[in-house]
Image 1 (cartoon, rainbow, N blue to C red):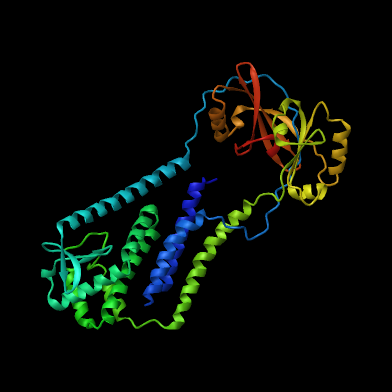
Image 2: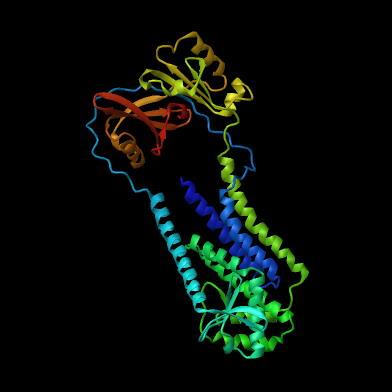
Length: 445
């Protein structure tokens, strides 16, 4: 089973993939740039938040499989030789998290270096006012760009008409707080560095910000053809910092294409509803399905010892050698026997009191719903234990040695459990495992 952190990452990256597929398949060529901005920001934020939110189950809880009476008498045999030193298996969850975390750390370090590079540029610049707009003037060849609330450029590089277009373009980035989008996209890319969808969504978000700025420039009255020629000239200049919005040749073709596209029709707004249905449906459905499997029993677990109502503390303190048998009832059968408010019921009967009147009365009460079917017990070799079980023993009981293993078989459920007898010095004690090597307590068997 995946650890909670890996499960979170799986759901978050899966959601990013769904949003990317929907965007590039349905929305990329629409001219609703503001809606596209909202969609892309929502995709990044939703993918990060929704895996951590409690999603209620959409279906009723699945009844647990019935568990029959467990016979705890064990056959005795010659003590096995002490097990050889056990080596714990590789924790692949921890390895995966370490690799993933290293990638995230490197991505965030790269982002930090880019921010420091921008700080150095700011120190090299000087404040200036160009055509009534406050800017930071840089020396030498530089591609105009903006970051946060500041525009950076070299006014001497641009003729009058081009300078006005550049300022108008960068003012849109500043006024609409596009730097927030840029930073969020870079953080998301660092956090989901191994997911191609994160890289694609970052590129799509940055492109869409340029489309928004281009539209604002054209709506201000600049000639479309003259503006596109200015973009072509600027795209051949020195590239600006990678973290900021700036004029670049690789995106020029798409920008010119989007400027020349006719406006999308109102009917195409339905694509956004379809995109949300195709993304939110599977994402929330997956989370709800897992929540449905994890729904707790409707009532508390009740414990009976020797036919009398008891509690978990007394149940767990029972000496396995003194237990004749256990009976675990799932909530469905418990409700049929004890009433609607019942959850699971765990019943333990000791060898000393297995024929008492209380035990016989309780057995008679449950016989019509969960009749007793004896289990079998047989000696087994140590090698029947899985590496997971051996690792658990090594970690939990480092000073103990394995004395013997008993295989417990339950015909009613076709389940198998293993009882492991351990010794620390001369004092024996016991632990139990299922077939997969997961440790189980008597009340969970």
